[in-house]
Length: 327
Picture 1 (tube, rainbow, N blue to C red):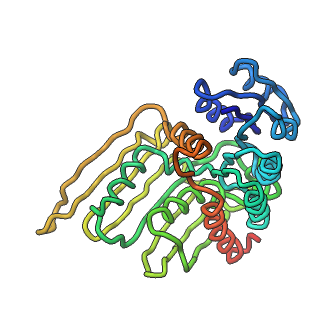
Picture 2: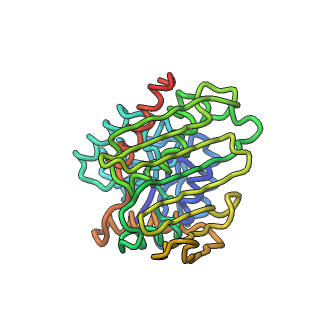
Picture 3: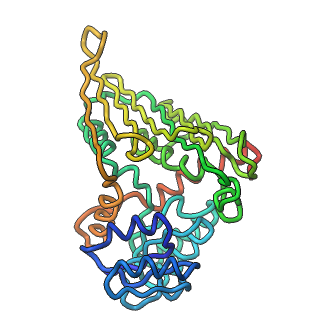
């Protein structure tokens, strides 16, 4: 496949590593031309541009990776679809539901694949957890407890994520949509949403913490917390069934070694039988995600998480922002 990359920051660089050498980068674009040139220089004969429309309409391009800041996610995706390209767009896929629904309309008209960058589903610990879940080993699920957070950095409240015009929201929209998506992946759709999105520490108009209590129609529950006042980066996601529990912690790097714990309840109860899988080394989720997208385009595999998944996450974020006075 022949790709364009729109947005040549950290995520654009990660995406390039998954494209090469199996696929080809045709053109890279970024408002800062020097960044586009640096990324394009890593791929044979790739062009660079500061005009994203030039990239998404390029006649040689099959698919566009949209790794821009949030305010450009929807317009770049829509333009790519209108140009007949497949798209993999970073979460949250749009700043709000209104923008996302415009993307959905464009996708319906184009008939092209749109995959949303919920890459956490592709971490090896979650792939194994999903396998155990689908085997029925956990028994009926009861609830999920998830926590995801980082500590920011000096000047974090002056970066683009702190500007609601660019970001659309704060920590709940940034990291929070990942754990919302993961909870929904296991429990299904949530019919009742309670939550609070305050700003405790950072001097910014968007939230720095998001607290959620989500319930399904059968009263299965997800208790989730996303924070950029965590100080020590952390990730923890626990899935509780009537027969066993799964616990995923760490995502590699500053979040710690990725591990999956499987606690199987004994008939006599007491301390459970415990199995631990450890996944050190490089984060492979980005490559697995790109491979699924490429397979979906070729018709050899089902698409990964898409616009409906983004919509479900944004619906929850929107409800919490409204009740917290953030909208």
